[in-house]
Amino acid sequence: MGQTAKLHYEGKEIELPLIEGSEGEKAVDCGQLRSATGLITMDPGYGNTGSCESQITFINGEEGILRYRGYPIEELAENSSFLEVSYLLVNGDLPSPEELATFTESIRTHTMVHEDFKRLFSALPKDAHPMAACAAAVGALATFYPDSLDPRDSRQVEISVHRLLAKLPTIASYAYKHSMGQPFMYPDNKLSYVGNFLQMMFATPCEKYEVDPVIQKAIDMLLILHADHEQNCSTSTVRLVGSSMVNLFGAISAGISALWGPRHGGANQEVIEMLESIAEEGLTAKQFVERAKSNDDTSRLMGFGHRVYKNYDPRARILRKSAHEVLSSLGVQSKLLEIAMELEELALEDDYFGERKLYPNVDFYSGVIYKAMGTPVNMFTVMFALGRLPGWIAQWLEMHEDKQRIGRPRQIYTGSAERHYVPLSNR
Image 1: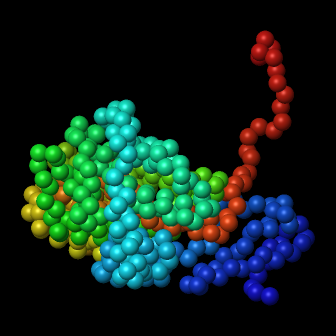
Image 2: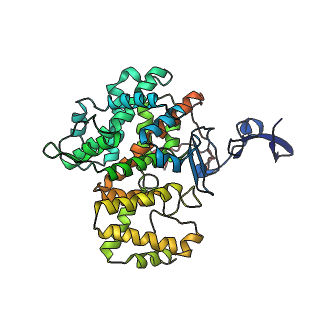
Image 3: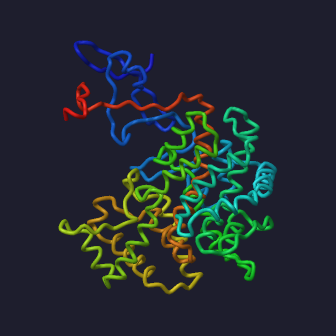
């Protein structure tokens, strides 16, 4: 018999099994707690609750470790491509050259969306947030492709996975073009995955977009760094919604909506909004840092610190170099970016932030890169969604492979005790 934890309650001793992961993490299995004792666990925000066992992503926040399927994020960011990492996450292992070529070709042939999608976007207001448009469009894929919706049919699932990976960049670019009042650009399958997305975003019928290799490399790396991050809010949403047996498109649409929130994927947008606020007030980076340190001021240094990482976010460490390369390559002169670089330098040198483990995170540098390349602020979170897509898909697939039952959290009721209806005339 393995190790157990013992719970003493009402004079009884109940033994709860321990589960140990491949990296030494341990958990108390509370699956039989309620049936044995009548108790449930209470953990608002699920900070101490494991919702599943997973073989996809490992994080050690104290040591700043992130691995996909066992591979360190540093090695993948340096040597791999986003489509190769997508294959790894979805299938479990790195592909052979032949497997990657077949996978890439399949994604390439599914990049176009149905022409009627133009009518879907034309029905939306011009100022609709691109994340709302993307969530609606991904959900609508289920109406265009009803032939591949069964989550327990492996062939239908494979088709939906490839369609979604191929079409989300097209859908994202449509959302942007619609907000700008510009004509939609068709995919150019001669280009790479990232290059194709960039040309659909920034080209017009009258002006070709030349893909800058430095930007293309930086965006590909950004997508890799965002590809999965264990059981975060949007990933847990995909799993919970998917446990109802809804199709992949419906589950991913829900994940996009979860990511939209400023506490999650919207954080990189808040970084730029903070920089704009500093510039508008005419503050120096040093003045704002002092404000952020003051207990008497509500100013917050956005893009620093992380819920999970109590060390330097390993993704930020990688992206820091890339951000400086992009700024140097583009030769961008921007007050906002000058402030950002000064904030970075001040915060990294200030003991106040070091003692509190407030290091620049991935949102800080991704916001800086997106701003430098001319990406509208409301598209920042869409870029995050593009990167997170293979992780969501992998988690959805694993949830079905494990035959996870439908998610149904418990609660502790704190409302009124039983009371009886009083007729309206007597109230």
